[in-house]
Image (cartoon, rainbow, N blue to C red):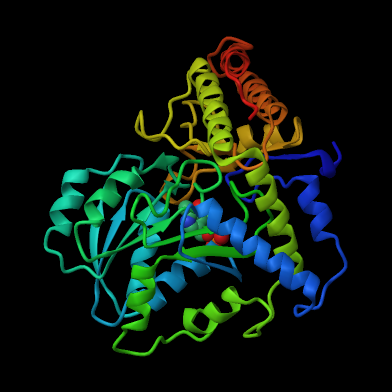
Length: 388
Ligand SMILES: Cc1ncc(COP(=O)(O)O)c(C=O)c1O
């Protein structure tokens, strides 16, 4: 099996369309050339439309974590209380970032994979003494999706800035930044957006921007200081630090692909793929880790069945069938696997992954009906319209 034909089905980085790869292969441009400035301007506008906001888009070199850091570094001052709503590994990351910037964490922790209890969120917010609250759209460790719209209804009634990490959501699941009262939303390039890792994207609305302007203390970060970057985002001909010119061209192409498909059609495709894959898992007698009804559409997180070893299963899938899936994250290591089905994934990729999973489990002696997973997935795929 040649490495070039492997299927990368982890929950990010995801496989990239040949159109994006061709854009990345272009000769390096000057960062102040008209061609590049036009590409950056278009990419930023397409990003704004992806987030469904009238806010200001930022597209910087870095990973998703840079967006998390920029959010806290710019919006939170020493001693500010931040409500961190957590139900997975990435939700918990916010605590470290907030504390690193002198904020005071008010932790609202739910079991990994359990849905948020909105009553408890409301109760905590009712003190109205939080500068911000942080919520994950999709926690990639557990495969749970959180009801951002409902949290937005609660946040809207307070002064708290509503910060959302949609690294594993946007581009694959509905997200309406303005309608859901999100003040700062962030993502990375390498998941449902469909580009390689390396670009951090986030948008701030006026409320968030006002909080930056009204700070009593200076922003401690230099590179992540958004006051330095805003003029560049408004006119990419300016200079603060050299942008990753190739990646911006790749991002423009990935964002063009998203808007050509259409947001609604893309969300629908992700839902159908997710339904199909999850139906297949069920038919293989695999239990899903996230709570029923709260599963993300961008990935699936089944528990590893009794008697099957994680490394044998993923090893067979990769070596014998050329399909790469991810292991469990953090405390779920060895207990779950994670299959990404987001971005520019196709029906063929999905079917090949289900088939590789099924054959590997069969070889490892798991109790299942051969072909059951594929059959269940096919039923969903064949009866839904997946194209726009
Ligand atoms: C939900 C979520 N948030 C944040 C991150 C961090 O992003 P990055 O690894 O690009 O820094 C990830 C990465 O997988 C993620 O899945």
